[in-house]
Image: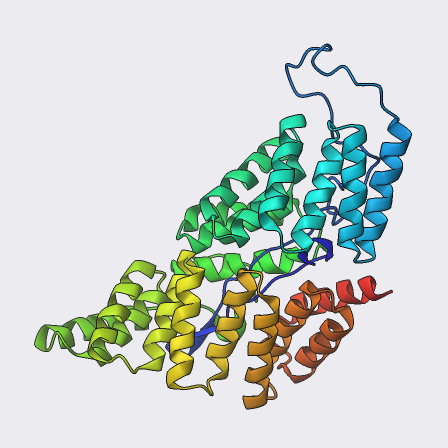
Length: 416
């Protein structure tokens, strides 16, 4: 149900050298009300204009009843709002039989198919909408979200880039592109996108807090200055500090003496990850695991590096291996929940967060992550309960507090 929520952000929470770190993932719904993001909720065909360069003959309308097509489109939207996605799809099918040139109806049917988990069908519908109206920026935006869910990060970036070309004020597309660019290691591109989001977004837009946190994390990881004051990732954020450089130097010396020192390889891998050297971290952790294949921390660090690289399946595999060795680590459970949420497996994310809370009943980020996964599953009441609990157990200076409050407000609005 990700497509019908105000905001769904599954948070990556890891421990690196004792410091919590996370990149917060944007998934802002279409029609959120942010300036510059058009809503798909208009009458049938509202966004299905004549493609550029088409002749009047090519776009001459067949003899159809536009009022009946509009009625079916609106009926489909009402069914979708009530959670009846099969009924919505039937209405959209009938509307398209009347007039197969309605980009808006293809778009809406794509939303319904995505809500049922049919990502391939959703992508096909949004592609059809774009054939009819190549300037349909939200079709690019939503197709990008589904491509990201399928692991096609490059395709997602391409779609969001097209959306921004059409509508330069589409902050949802900019924010998601920034998150995926960060995952792929393109920190310059991520900083550019998050900076633009903060320039364009309204002060009360919930995604603004996510952009501020992510920008701070990335700048800290690069040792940059001037991030938004007071914004930190869960537990503190990456520092890219002189201590990390010192740790790497000390590990280099130890490895010159004993190249098979798994502890030194692991510490250097963690320090490299803290500095944003994802490939170096993966290399060190992989070498250390050849020597000591039963070190849960190594699997956890490598899983996080893989997650940031965009290898979601590899991250889940590593977190699962870490939990096989030590099943009672709440941080690893929350990490795996984040990875599962990135794949759209919200049930799995909820299960992992619930297990983490059995171990640590005051784990604020586990409550927050579970709340967002529940929100994505359409359980607004459960999400509200979790957000309230997260805010209750978290310290007053919790860096995620502002965003959790915005999510709570959005969930309460949906429950009315």
